[in-house]
Image (cartoon, rainbow, N blue to C red; front, side, top):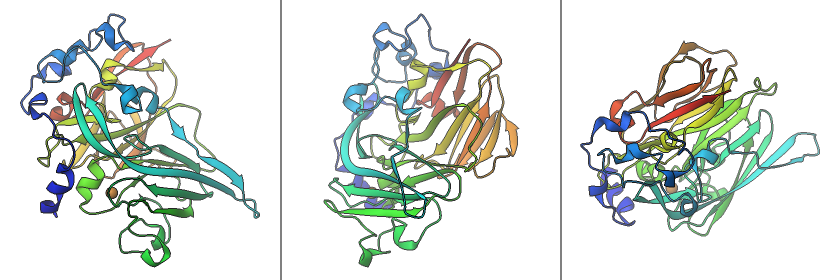
Length: 348
Ligand SMILES: [Cu+2]
């Protein structure tokens, strides 16, 4: 399986490994220099990316060329379109198109991604428990793909090659399409991703996203955001050179996430990292309630650090009692120093 991975991923553009050395300075974990440069990369607010870990200095990625900006993606929930079925049940529909696209995952570091709807992670699909869901998948990529949803459904809707082929499901070849249909259950934070082997290649290239099923009774009002923990093997050596939440390394260090003091913050956190066994989330100077998989309305733990294996996910809820800058990052320091690090900026 691994032998098959190399040609599968090496078909894209060759990346300059020299841009992202494996040995790197620890300076990246230092606080950013905040001189009002937030949100204005040209103002040099990301000076910490010059401190020796090898990323191109003095800039940020080209969000416009990427077609998505992690700051916007953070609170971007795709609720699709809804209609009423004859029995009164809500039908919710989306269309996802897979296509290949080069994206910039750190300043100057391009990656030949495979995307759903042109972004990595794919759209955060959001629905409510009990609805009927239809997801039309169009494969505009040069490779065969599927969408495998976590949830409860019939085998033909599982997005696995070899299952449901006679009904048009299974492997979806370039130019083909298929509509997945299933009920929204159970409530919680789930995932979707391609399930074509070699899986490590198809997933780490970018074919994944978060899938939220809200409980019928809803959750308390909050400032909600999605963090998909991911990484990129930019030199195709089966290990990651860049780590991030929502794709762009150090993005939330350069552009801290602004939240309100005292307001409930709810983070939908999922781990889609390939090649590494485990990922983690740690917030500084605060604690959060943790709801694993989001399938219960009662938290299991009050903590400041959680770990997730690949495919695990959960919901974090916290309030920041003080204004100021608060770091969050993978507690695996190597990941933090290679991009998985950001800040909350708490304001009144
Ligand atoms: Cu695929």
